[in-house]
Amino acid sequence: MQYTLRSPASFFLSALTYVCFFPANGAFLAETGARFATDHLTILSNGAYILRAHVPQNRRELVKNTRYWDRDNVHIDRLFFQFNREAAALAPEMFVRGEISSASIPTAIIDGWRLDPVRRELLRPAPVGAFAFWHAFNFNPRMAPQFEPENWRRAVLNLNFRKAIFHGLDRVAAMLTFDPYDPLRQISNTITPVNFASVDGIDYTNLPALQPIVRMQVFDRALALTHRNRAMTELRAAGVTFPIRVKMPFNTGSPDWTNRAQVIEQQLESLFGREFIDVMPVGYPPTGFLDATRRPGNYAIQEVNWGPDFLDPEAYTQPFEAGHLTYSDIALASANYQRLLNAAKAEGRNIRRRFELFAEAEAYLIQNALVMPYRVGGGGYVASRLHPFQGSYAAAGPAVGKFKFQRLLDRAMNVEQFNEAQTIWARDRVIALRKAGQ
Image 1 (cartoon, rainbow, N blue to C red):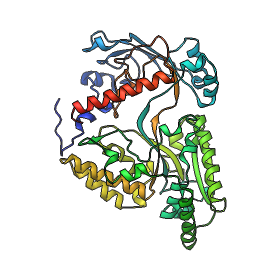
Image 2: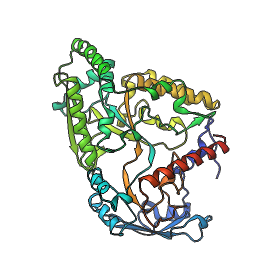
Image 3: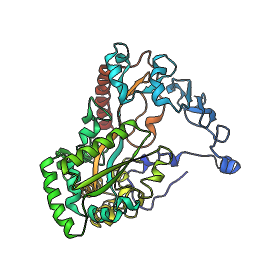
Image 4: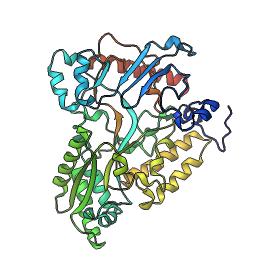
């Protein structure tokens, strides 16, 4: 197979690792048609594992591919996934009984595990990932009349209003609902995470445009109140009525998100006063959550996320492109960002200059409070017999979900063992990247 590019793309090889480039047999695809990949009989495998059984909403079973080119690095012979609607509640006890190999430990029961001398030794953090989470302002609200969408639209176009919320949101307090022991571990001041990409030995977030943002103290009560006072004067002149209603959807299937919505409501209203803002958390069920909230524009502020498909800062920009209505259309608030973004995307040969231009575009996005960066993905706590740093790794694409190289541990890691293994992995990664010229 040969690909011919219309313009230079330094990141192209990393893009080839993404799922849309996985190979498919053309004749088999034509034979199965719409049934392709709907079960284990309508998909062909050429990777480390072969899908032997797949019953939707029931179970999946994969077995080692003995004809795989690198089969000596496939150490687990069988993978079995059992669907369990109550997994969040039942999985921790199933792990303790030895019925499963890995389980997420919800925030609500972590204290109990930490106080139990046996379970404490089974508990460890989960590594953080490259997904970006932020609180999105909706510049094209399509909410029910009781949420006063037109009043919100006028308010959110005001820079001082956005900056008041930007500096008034205590992200650490919100993050305590997800990680009560180390909330700073995942906090991010930028959309593109630290350690995602580098150029000439410099991390992307350390380029001149973004370096001050990385070091910025975002939550600033005094600054937030200054912007609130300015916004009230400007918004009254523009005909905005108070309090400004802020519809904030959350997923009821996520206990920490449910708690976080309440924390944010109380924190913002306490800081600004109910005469200025009325934060209105609204719960939606997990099934069809995005179709009911973000995609149709049924929100004022919402916690959203995006993951990179390739190793380049451009990978994080798609939600902010002009016309990307499912993530709120930034262009409705500022055409300058799109101009900066276009300039960055046009630079395909000088990689240092390309990264600098993307950093300038991202800095503009954040300095004008068009988005509110929040955290990176992953994290939380798990009990698992899988070694967290033994499998394949890439900051973009599906590498993290693969089982090649993995071995089952005799006993789950504890926190101290995890921290030691992470230090070794980070050191070895830097060495490997330098050898590769990164």
